[in-house]
Image (tube, rainbow, N blue to C red):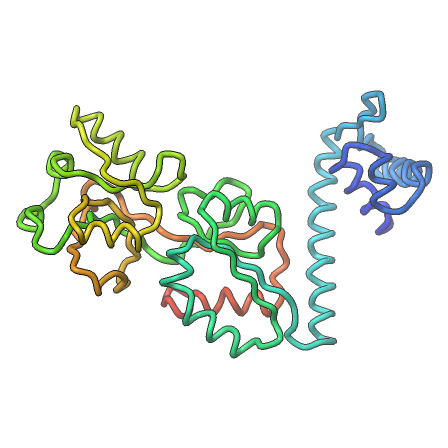
Length: 299
């Protein structure tokens, strides 16, 4: 078994075409077909089913070999980048994506420290909604993303980072502040500020579902997907708003707001660092992960 055979097989499996795989590896289709046949002779099995019209599908043995090929290519990429680092020092690119609130409240000090430690690393930060963050990680457009742990699909690695608590934002001195525990009926009495329906975001769908289950009507006074914007209008008395706040974070404390706990209605969740399972953690990427969890005390 040779490296070019593994590479040719991998591209054929992904593209489901010997022609496409030949183009991707800069070989003739005949040469690539011979590579695959050589592998099949070596392992005494068929790796592909020829479906006609140039299309191919993996056999059960081919599926197993694809797992091996993906790991081999991933290990090679990690080795290659390690060698580049040895030649250049800690240089490379680190790409991160996270929602605005995470970048605004949780990242500045970490980014400052990381840049001081790794001045040769080109850092790219993307402000994206949670669903976009997950897609960027899945496709490999970024190295790391940050999203709620429960939203991370299978196939991606999620490592819990910060606990998030659900609270009700109300103006300071609001009548709900006098209650020992705020219930759904209490919330429904007041206009609500919630994210738009088309935003994959907590705050609206779960709350409205619970209100419907109780037969409680409600009014949406404002739609906002940004907690900073929401806080301005809650303070003005436009409405009250369910919100997720990172535990222990002093964000929004400068505003005249009260944060009423809703943990008895909504279970706490966690922001997670997410990454692809087969991504090579070269030293400067691993250092970012280490710094991230050391700074939060969850390492």
